[in-house]
Amino acid sequence: MEAVQLGQYAPAGKILVHLSDTHFLANSAPLYGAVDTDQTVHRALEQLHRSGIRPDALILTGDVADRGESEAYRRIRGIVEAAAAQWNATIIWVMGNHDKRESFRSVLLGEAASVGLASPVDHVHDLDGLRIIALDTSVPGYHHGEITDAQLTWLTDVLHQPARHGSILALHHPPIPTPLPLMSVLELQDQPRLAAVLAGSDVRAILGGHLHYSTQGLFAGIPVSVAAATCYTMDLSAPHRTLTGVNGGQTLNLVHVYADQITHSQVPIGAFTAVTQFSADYVDELAALSPHDRRQAFSRQQ
Image (tube, rainbow, N blue to C red; front, side, top):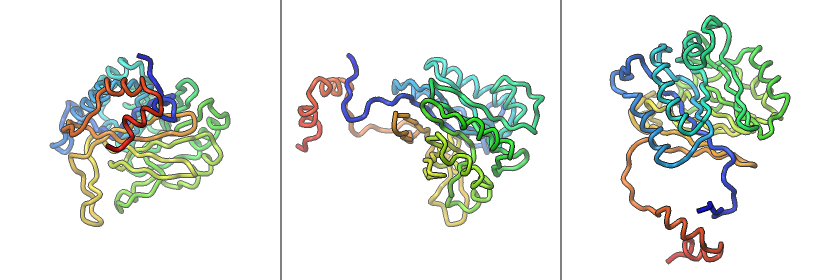
């Protein structure tokens, strides 16, 4: 049956899947000898297929491969492309501090690896008027983030002409504070310079990774959403001033783009026991009712 709008908001114009920090190793080697990185990504994509959601794009915000190995890139590219093909979704790869520009370019983007380390991997995607800007904040040989003068000039030129449905900036190092002291050493440097470029632009959201836990903030008046890693996550409840990664708490983010706002939702990756459920048939029954009768049937406390 035709979908009926049950609330005040029409369906999102675009749905984006935001994944980060997959940290694949060559030959499916377990990360730190303990984490099966492939299994979590497979499970995340299977959950999306089960849901019936048809995303318009998959955005991976960096640290795609733990050591920048070509085989690791080929493997995750095969997994992600197979899923994206079923949805006809665009794939947007973003560089992280663990990634290597040469193999990232050649394997994931199909570009010439000869460009080498000197040139950041920045690119722009147009999703029917929604502009996605992938900005490379990596620094070869280091784990902190930087944006060069040339990149800021490039970004200024890109943003000079507003996109029909606005822009989303995707980068690895999120420009927001972290309560983890050691992670703050590895933050994006000189953030005011980026803020000056973004001020007054059409950027509606900033997507990031790097921190290995989900968090949100505000930068230059723009909402920032960080996706937790699919490999392992940071334990924010660990003893003070320690940095502890755990094999649990992995999530993916769903980004729903509406005409006047964008929402970011965390989806736990894994199998969990259902404790309550309303079926699709029940939703169809509600859809057949008037708005008043619908509220009486579902909102009224028994």
